[in-house]
Length: 587
Image (cartoon, rainbow, N blue to C red; front, side, top):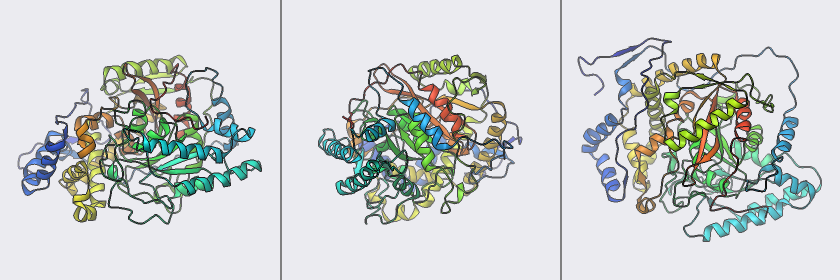
């Protein structure tokens, strides 16, 4: 219950963070798939389950922690932050000039080892006439056909249409021949997560019951990509309704996509297919959505770059509004340069999307600096070290590398880490449960088992839980404002563990692995709860060859700083391992 007599309440002083100094704990929960998962889901949705089993799961996972706190701050229901007006009247360098020099410097790697094909390589081919977007489109189609024949099936792109792809490619080829490309993305292959509306595909959101008719209206990000001349090669796979972080999706339209580095491992989710498509070379750019690490987790697991923009920075109009207060859209790319190019096209206010209307002008000024002198990076080492030893070892070396470039590391203490985790879970699950109420009532038996279990847990959160979680959000945002007065960015590992292995039963019934979910989301939730931007950059591999990432977070609207640090961080890895599943579209 939420109000037993004699319950001791802990008062939280406004403005004073509560630090335990303890490392975040891993929850106790067995990994469920096959019959145990079916049984658990059946019980969770019975009267016994709702009165006994689910409340037990909620207590075991510490989701009741906020119920016994006395928090004075008013709740913040959406983390929209007004930018402090700068009084710098100097003329900023034109965005396209910065992008041009950025793309030119991106090609100066002369080593003959493997590296991903970036946007600049496509553009160079088009400019020289050695390549046309039409040829590229034909190569993409051949790769998509091959991926469908592969065993096990790759399942990164779940809907595509040959005629649609060729039509866009033909128009782009004509523009390039006339030396009149629309933007740096003209002729660049791109895919979008199935949560985002793309004409003429089905807007299924990873389910088998939504989007029964082809979509007739593009989302804002889709429209922006079309206006930039990009070739949309299809829509990518996703964890059903974005309710998990593995990418495991056993329903008939989707199947579980494979990690290009290790096909017996998950891609991460929920933007699973987007990450797999980029890592496998099908396209240098994909778009995902991130409510609890859903861009950054698959980017980390698949060894590519992932950006979650500031809350409201990139329009969410035309996406399934699964969790309105935690989700930010962002690009998944093979390089930080390509992420900056995509960001420059996608960011900006949209009259159809209320949360980004007051945003400052997207800028990339200052991202091309020779070093990182004067940059202060905040690290809470107790929090940072709550990860696998292999992950920690590589990430610590990456931090040392940033230091060698002139950045200074500042020890900080991130207060109330456990409260932040729980507040984020309550917000995202409550908002999803609310939005999916009709689906839960009408399509319950068509949902994946894991989705049903998560929604059963969500139905036990109360209005008081939700308000308390949003009071915690206010506290955490206030702490961050203070922290960002002292440091420019925060550093953590990307995920606390590398990509988990796929068990055979997962492919039939799905799986519920709370332990892995917790460890993949650990460093992600702060940015989703508070709305700050965050970037993951691959920094190495485990002994078995699974990718490892470092995450950089900055204050609201300061994506440019993330790119500045990210560009330098890319210099840390001396090589990029070639994925086991890889298509060289430029041949």
